[in-house]
Image 1 (cartoon, rainbow, N blue to C red):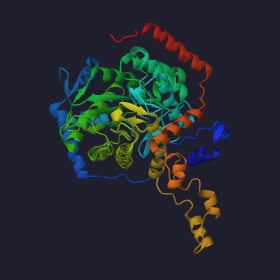
Image 2: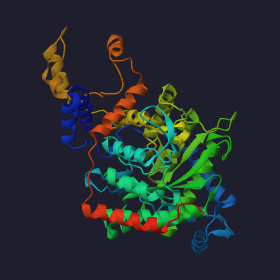
Image 3: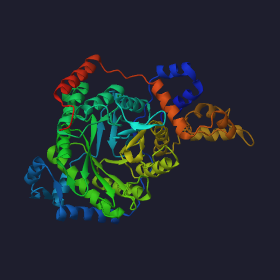
Image 4: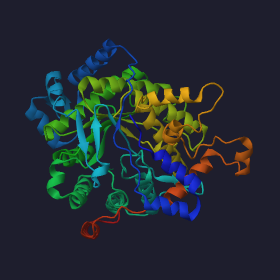
Amino acid sequence: MNVPAVELTEQTHRRGGGRLGRKALRSAPIASFPTLVRNIPVYEIVPDEAVELIHEESLKILEEVGCEFRDDGAIALWKAAGADVRETRVRIDRALLMELVSKVPSEFTLNARNPERTVRVGGKNSIFVPMYGAPYVRDLDNVRRYGTLADLNNFHKMAYMAPALHSSSSVICEPMEIAVPKRHLHIIHSALKHSDKPFMGIVTSKERAEDTMAMAAIVFGEAFVRDNPVLVAITNCNSPLVWDATMIDAMRVYASHNQPLILAPFALCGASTSASAVGAVAQVNAEALAGVALTQLIRPGSPQIYGQFMVTVDMKTGAPMGGTPEAAQMMYLMGALARKYRLPWRTSGFHVGSKLNDAQAGYESNMLMHAAILSGANYIWHSAGWLEAGLTCGYSKFATDCEQLVGWYKYAGGVSFDDFKEAMAAIREVGPQGHFLGTQHTLEHFESAFFMPSIMDFNSYEQWNAEGAKDHDTRGREKARNMLADYEEPKLDEGIAEGLRDLIARREEKLPDTVS
């Protein structure tokens, strides 16, 4: 598999320099990697018998303990399907559960407003998606402060500029100056305006989900969004074993439009699950399957994503921890279960506890992304910007994560033998005691043969010192500034742009400025 030559773009930015170099980059189309097709094996951390044991225990949880669905419509659907319903507690027979889960497609197409950015989710396909939901940012001056709409615009621009990001997410950071009831309109508008990649929906109320679909309909066409996935939305089960009305409301809006949801329990292992990695997986699997099954009562055959967010809790303080070995092990187990059910599945890549883009952030990120790739995850969320357990999105972290994703893309794409014959010929051409720098093979391949990052520094100490002795975090902020300077907006059709502005204005007239 040959990785698109984004390394050339990175190196051009380093060597071209100055205004002319930036102008040349702006005149070229923005590089964008296609869907990552993993050409390396998945890693099975336990034998099939262990996966089957967890599966059986999950079914018993749903049959014997049950799951709460705190929504009258959901309860009516479960009753009609023949589940054992007592008030809001639903016990689901395994045959009914697995029949519903089997209706979910194993793969689906996620459409972008620019068809060249359309991707596939499921099977051997993986996509990288930026973080979501940070109230704070660590800005270009390394100051931690509340996020603004300008910050959100910037992160959507950077997501568009990053070749290995396949989505713009949505609420990468919260625009805190905008009233909460109106905030979702500006979040979705920013994602649609500043990037032409797929995006994510809002789930904090039924009305906000409906507004999201209305905005998508303006961009893609009402008939298209009725049946074709253009966004992904996240719904979280409240562990242990509760699907609440807000999540189910959003689920109903998106699933009825054939838009995929991530059905993801939010598990603080040791607090909202037992203090056991395998015990936590059995519970989270039950919660996720129950959510998946409900989507199929809403719209059979709708594409969905089996999900999980599982972090361990520091048993001394109660704080969530990021890149721990147990979090990685739980990813491998969830991946094995997803393959058993033939479900597309989501995990998180670079979600860390570190407050800064420092060594701890690097260690945590590597632990989790390695597990995400080798466990076969399809939708790898929180792949850029995440700091401080998700409370903060960092400009430097976003830029350095994006660069690392290029390396992970190449790693997961597998080893190419396309030029092996020519490489062997070069050995014969050079012979003993020569060098390969001037061979035809090197001249043809030097820009794409190896991962060549522009933020990481491999110069001599003397050269590094002469250039300011900058650490990785500083270089990341510089890269973020360059990305924003090089950005050119992928313009919406003027009629579409006006339609979005009009919808926002009409909705803002009706919406309050405070949450009642």
